Image 1 (tube, rainbow, N blue to C red):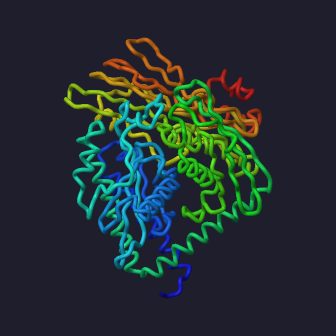
Image 2 (image 1 turned 120 degrees about the vertical axis):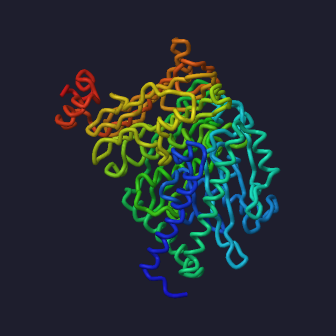
Image 3 (image 1 turned 90 degrees about the vertical axis):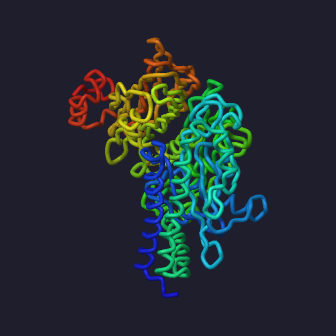
Length: 562
């Protein structure tokens, strides 16, 4: 093995990153479902053969899957070692979506494939894709009132879906028999496996060029440097204890808020996160499994220190105490459909609210923090087939020391984007009557929050059932350092012209719709940063001139109307 010089190290690091990026691209390009092909609700990565720890992940993959796939791969390796899962052979691909085995919710389906060199496993490639349906009581899987995980859909332990690159017809038949629009899933399944095969080819090219030993040494060095860089950033935080709270509107069953109580202790080069005072496990589907809770902390710190490379080393200085006895450490059979898309973002919000006290120049006010999960399932009589539509939507980001928050940004947990309206109207029997910036939704501050999204969609034909698992309908995204909260999430369903607001504000399931009925959604704006009275008068005038705020709103929020 030649000496590992800085240039070689950088090239290998970039090559590993590019491998993951190509897997992401292959997955999206080949997938059938708009939620993957257009919204990019997926992620790919490379993981250690020893302990499943993260080596590299695609830059365009969802950050919340960073810790999740690491945990999941580790679990598969351990189960194989104990004989609980069949031992792998070259070309095998495992499928798993069990949330209690290092997952999120059931709709996030993970594939994992061992990569062999010289007859031994060199590493694992893994990816996650959001399937638009996984069975369960409601189309799309987002049951707002489930009280057990079985009501949320098909739960798969690690099993070989592909054996020596051949799809196992029996496992596939089980999946088809338990999900809706089963005939359309083969496209996503083939795409998800193909992404892993692409990654293997690219990885072999790197190993052939630089040699296995050199790449192994580079991976170890990159992990060491990531840990060192994270510790250097943590050193900027004054020693002490920082506390914050964030709230989930309700669990969808009991109409009371859930509290995420966080204490962060900075000592030396380590941050310790303690959620032990949070609410106990809830009845409804807003519990979070441990892997998602851990990953939510990791992604929040990635937002704060974005220059730290994505590697298991970056997580080493971050100690998260297991929040036993709380809704952030869900155990079977607690329902969890809201954990990845909603609870994870409240966890991140709590981290932001704590860390802004220590690093006001690095941390922003709270972002919208909801993926806006809206599922619509029914029958399209014009095409003679069933459908399940899944809509995600953006919202405002929080203001920060450097300026106003981003408008209609993606969710905190990832870079997924809303599918284009034209694609949705082409694929499903719907018409978007309105799709625009949600004016006035940004929280006031020296630097205001970004604005959310307002849209209205109409069912054109047939009958369907609508379900929502959203959040921030009761409490808007937190403003900081004197800034105001962003506007809350709003959902209204118009049935035969009569307006209906869900009792839980942003959570309800099985709302029957017929042709002509409409759903209107207003996503949250970001929180404001700093005293609103300190906002530059020219910026207030610009906001009013652009129609972001009315003169009356500006007068109330900023003490001047423009």
